[in-house]
Image (tube, rainbow, N blue to C red; front, side, top):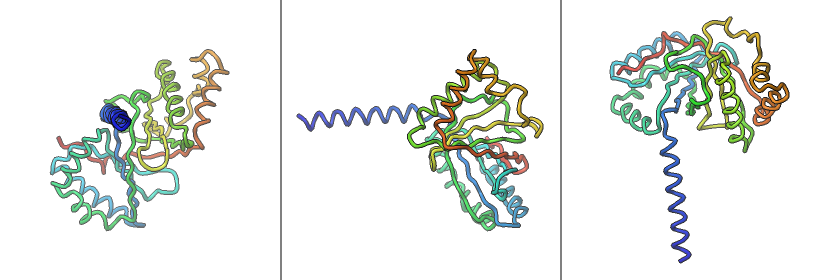
Length: 253
């Protein structure tokens, strides 16, 4: 009797987990490859990358691959190759398409010799807390703040993000932004903000803290909300990237 009860409980838990996974399989996964190029080989790498992207396009690649290069930081010899947004199931189908069309073999034959290192990241996009219109397309520049979440603070940090983002959206904060959370690697959350020019990166006349104080009708409540947000991470890092339309590839279909 006890064994049967345990079995029923375990089965119920597994059903809940399965239902949760299925419910979370939204088209909100971003795939990002960080490719580090051998010193002095950037022109050759870019030429090879264009050839490879043309190969993918000719074979009906269904993803839009956006290429970015860093303008700040100490890893300026890297290229960010990013595609969004997909479900987990989409990744299975795409892996099969890649195998059927020998994309890896093409990359290894044409591009790999110019590369010194690779990194691959998957993240989930919180569309509800973001403010990036679907028809806006890639921005010329993107500023990305990486937050390093404290152990055990993922849930309260997410709650703080959702709360502040709702106030920003409801109050008409005059910015666009996207929140993403790393699925793999260190516990990291990033905030990406698009810019059309360097001038757009200048701080707004009204700071977010001042905007928040007006929306909450209390400077003290605003400071408390911002303090709550800051209490869940161990610092941040900010980088600026440039979009490279000359290297990027729109979906073929």
